[in-house]
Image (cartoon, rainbow, N blue to C red; front, side, top):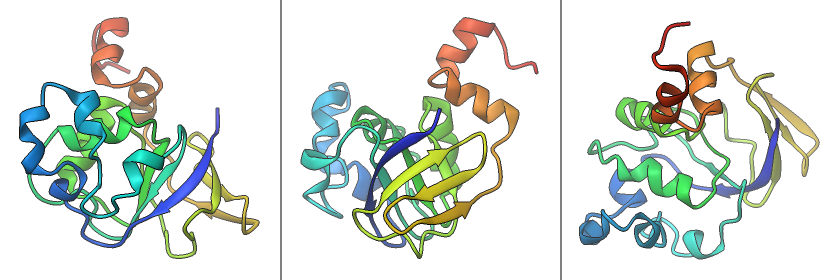
Length: 165
């Protein structure tokens, strides 16, 4: 089922510390509280205003830095539909899929702040409803899609028992 929301635009090199600052380390066991500070060092208006289904749209190397698992988790807690970026740090990408947060590698240059987007993971398409344009991206693997459909790796394994396809 397609996801629709508005674009929140970020630049290149958004680190895990931008996403979930180390100064809030004491909140790591209170993820709902920690999520209230998501991306505040990059944009302090993000966490209080993001809506269910909205998209984080970034440039190159999103999620670089430490392997802080809280980074994709707090984005998901806020209800973000997906993170769209030109590229991702490998560990952030893997952590995002593992917790059930869609991460899409695509050209984000034409997406503007506030554009209304509709993401279809199965078709590999992002419809920019504001601009009337289409962005295509390589389809995710069957395994990745299945994990995302279940809400992450743990729910997938609880339901299916293993990762065999």
